[in-house]
Image (cartoon, rainbow, N blue to C red; front, side):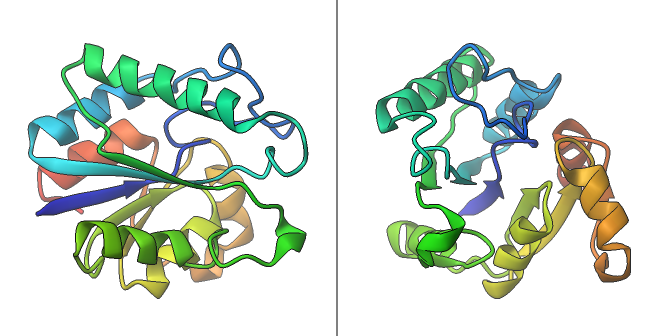
Length: 180
């Protein structure tokens, strides 16, 4: 089984320091929906793992998050793709949960649900916490420059020893052409 793990905000959709709080604020990054579709068409199971502390902060509710995810999945379906699962952490940083990236709780959950190891599975994110969580499960991290990616690249320059791409579309093209 071919799996790929994607972060959401800043990788698939535009990010905001004020949080994405509504369906209307959930705006796909150009090319990201088509990239997910390409993955599906190439027999990848696409899994989203995302921190959503806006829930614990009271910025939006679970039903609003579900509506955002519904919008994302419908857009991918329009391009004949599939998002196979979405795992999210609703907790804030102070909650000290095991599911909030950079901890790997949600990654371990994917391993349990799909009965697979994430070793050598591509994990695409825009923040260093995405990278750290992927490394804990021996995944293959990839950084995109969208979202917080440019800032991550600048702040973590010494720690970047994995592929970096302009956006999800470019990363997916590299994966599918075996140029990663």
